[in-house]
Image (cartoon, rainbow over all chains, first blue to last red):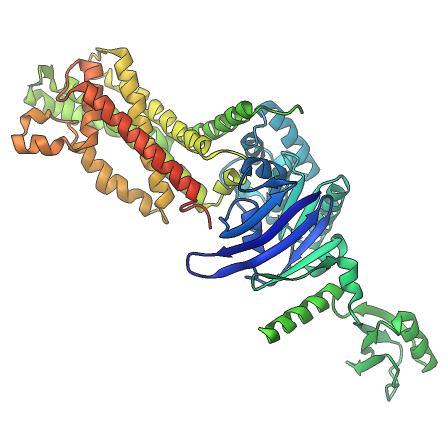
Length: 307
Length: 261
């Protein structure tokens, strides 16, 4: 069964702006799905429609087989949302925010507190339960929104830029948390501007641009389509003249750094062998760009040119 | 956890909104309950005691006894209205109304919860100003049931008004326009301080289009047993307003006016 199916979903705002121009999308149950796109592409509108925050113009939305028009309550009961912007009452205590959210889903107060405790403990916020939300740090506020979204055990969790503005340590702990959650069976849809986040976490991906889906495939298949990758190599000794190697192009950046674009046919082993034959020793290497980022930028460029 | 019945889910959701609203105005009681008590006390002192003694009787009652019902109801009206308008607008402004919109809570429960919160504050303030009035007058209640019904219905009506105002409001200025330019004049001209029988015939007729007049008189009947208008008509008018405003509010919620997109 699909966790989410969008069919020919359209949204035109009152000012005439067409945010979505007939989107078809399917997310399988149990998937960790990336929904990517530049700012203003239509991601937030699509999420807004699925979560009942935005009225659609036409098309259908189904969540675990429930139609949004026919059975909105069943659809809402399946979804947990972590929005991009903080959207809780800043003057309410942390515990109350989570308990109230549970109450809106019909969970009685005693059970709601039990779940809130579980949820807040998992996100290291239980000690803050009596504090006003406004006193939390940015990272804590993000975690509070995750705790709130999980309190009714949603089958589908939608995370809209969940790690925006949090430091790398918290981001990594959130990645691990999301992975665990997905392993336990929760379907996750993630939108993010950190493409390495999408690449490392998600199994399937859709890219949306100007209100249309421009790519919808498995992550590994999409990355496989990348014909060349660019690396930065730190070499022990830079030769006076760079060798010409088949299957790659090289550019000297400084006395020790080379930028090398390697074709998939040559591969990393082939590159090292060729450099070795030419007497070059590589001390360290790193990707110049994240692979998904390369694909994403090329896709957006192609889209802009064709527009 | 076992599957919850729809009725049980709705009841819990309603209780959650109501409790949240009560805790909200309870936490800031110095801003929500105390000011109308102080204002009404000043009315009792100045208009009731100081000026009232010179005015003498009105409709066969000491002037302070005559104005007490209107003053209590005026505090109830203002409190019910401002509780809902400020709370719902603030939930829009801070976007936490989204917590409700994404949840499986039907619109009528959202409306009932907020209106319930407005009524709760109206009741809290109403009880407080009634207790204060006991320092100035020997309050006797002519008809308990009638008093309670008018008290609650008026509170519901103005809580609904506050909800609609909050839906349309785009800024904090917008939530004070209606209370300042509509609610206050209607209340002051609604027979709180005088009997409309004192007015010339023409102004008596004009006064009859003011809905607050019916509420003030219906409440005064409950407390004192006297009214300028037919109390049955007052009840019908209050109920018609409540039905109309409820239908209008639900329609706004259904279309997502001011809260979606």
